[in-house]
Length: 113
Image (cartoon, rainbow, N blue to C red):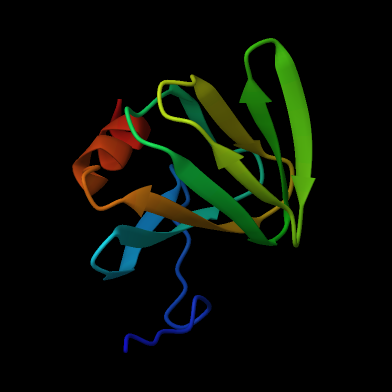
């Protein structure tokens, strides 16, 4: 069994989103992404399916030519290979579920470029 609290030790970065690995299971990596209002992740994609769960706040989730306004409680499943971007319209906390085969360094590279 693995246990964590997504709100424990929460920190925001002032200049870019903050990424924290919460834990890994046999099949997934569970990641917390903390956005300050106005922070964003530019368009990117992964080869593997992802799940994005809004814990708090609100953000615009861009897929193709559509923008979906996500709020606390919303959950989105996205197939691999689908380009997407995120922009916080409020301070926000997101839980990102990655495939075990995906790399956290790929997510870090999105915010560092």
